[in-house]
Length: 246
Image (cartoon, rainbow, N blue to C red):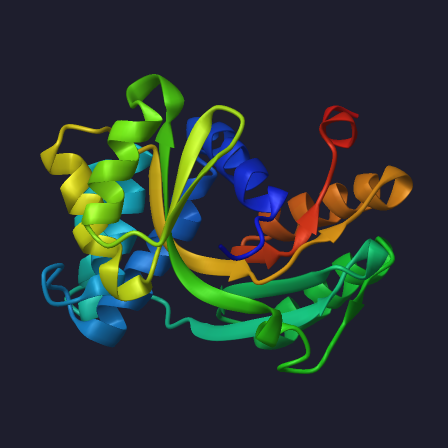
């Protein structure tokens, strides 16, 4: 399959902590509102909205918050209009970084992203400088305590999954974006709990970073993701467990 980046695993762990603190709600509300504004408030007809609402439910967001965010997007309630902007650049060790944002002030966001990258030895690049290193895929995580690998593989592959990998405490299922819903639905029909599910950008290859570069990179990625204008951060780095624990 495509290269596996440690950031996807780290990000899911961080998301669980952020969800407990309520920090994730702001980003989810933005995404739900924007998805509804672009494709309408019907989850069945709007795949992006359906994915955003699924993420909100996984984070235990109250249904009232979800409904209010959708109404802001469809214009039934007043709301802020956000602009989508993707930033591309490089981090310590030459790793590729892509940053999806939703912002009401692009000047502020651009300044913030440039500052974050420069602070930790990275740089902001031109559009297209690293996007070719990634491909859009569906990514579904299942806790190892909830499924046996062989049974999981049978269900997922039969439903159209491209590959399954074994990580620390999860299985990661990779799909073509068009097959994402069918694979996820197949798991749910077999009563396999899904820990997380999203259409994301996966690196074609990875870059190994070590020591000081690994430490700076992890701090950079966390700082970027903590920015309220940032929705998603993608990177192609790989690190050793020792560097993660450090």
